[in-house]
Image 1 (cartoon, rainbow, N blue to C red):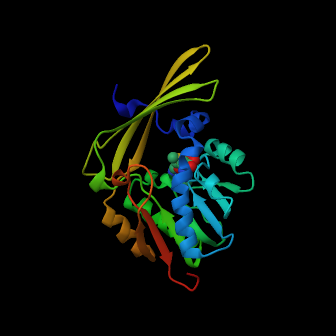
Image 2 (image 1 turned 135 degrees about the horizontal axis):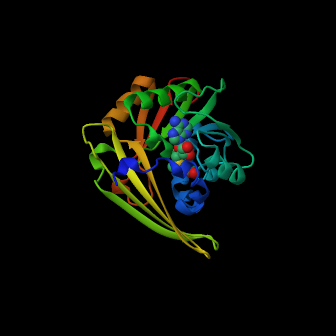
Image 3 (image 1 turned 180 degrees about the horizontal axis):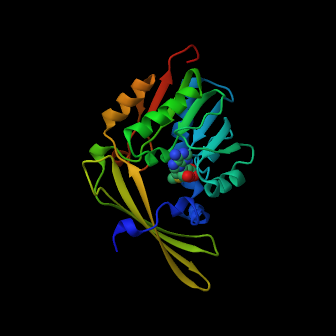
Amino acid sequence: MESTQIQANRLYGDLAYLWPLVSPVEDYAAEARCWRDVLRSKLGPGRHCLLELGAGGGHHLSHLTADFEATAVDLSEAMMRHSRRLNPGVEHLVGDMRTVRLNRKFQAVLVHDAISHMQTEADLKAVFATAVAHLEPGGVFITSPDHFRETFRDPTVDSSTRSDGETELTFIEFTCDPDPADTTIETVLFYLIRKRDGLRIETDRLTTGLFGRQRWLDLMAEAGFRVECHQRDVGDVAAQPDLLVGTLSGAAT
Ligand SMILES: C[S@@+](CC[C@H](N)C(=O)[O-])C[C@H]1O[C@@H](n2cnc3c(N)ncnc32)[C@H](O)[C@@H]1O
């Protein structure tokens, strides 16, 4: 079977119910602390308003809502169902991070790992324009690509087994770069779902973007941000790209 014959994006559709086992909420705590520290250092004290684009299951966001007033946008209603449960005080809206316009301004716009779903430079430019459109002068945009082209290892393989008592999920991810001349990579996902009545196996596929580090910095600068890189102080630091932090010119910071 060709990998392209595998149905794509099921993790955000019919398999979204598995998200808490795929990527548990507690795994985001350390990283969210880095984001909170950057936000505090840029915006100062106060319960600032932030917009997270591609907030998904709200796992990352759930570690920020004690300190900030949040609005969440995502394409997938199935993913946002988790976030609504975890983050009851947060406004949730369905939208595409490239085109959504809420006609409101925030002190910060965040795009966590969902930025990886941008497959072309035009996509990245569109997201940066969305961030600019929703930021007050002096506002802060933070994003965190999963990989930079320079440090991506082909193939990357990851696996885990987790259980919630009723469902045991063994999750295997295989990521490779079929065409190094383009700006995308492919992840094939296997879900081995074990319940009392037996084992079911599901497959899935995600296409994500891969860009060089300098390209990210240049495109953010072209969008109007003063850009800094902050090291993420968690996990395998060498394998993790920096947090990219853009500040809009203006009075606030
Ligand atoms: C890995 S999940 C995000 C998980 C999230 N960081 C969390 O903590 O639960 C990626 C999310 O990006 C969303 N997404 C992909 N493309 C998008 C787009 N163009 N606009 C908005 N959301 C998008 C998907 O629906 C999915 O929920």
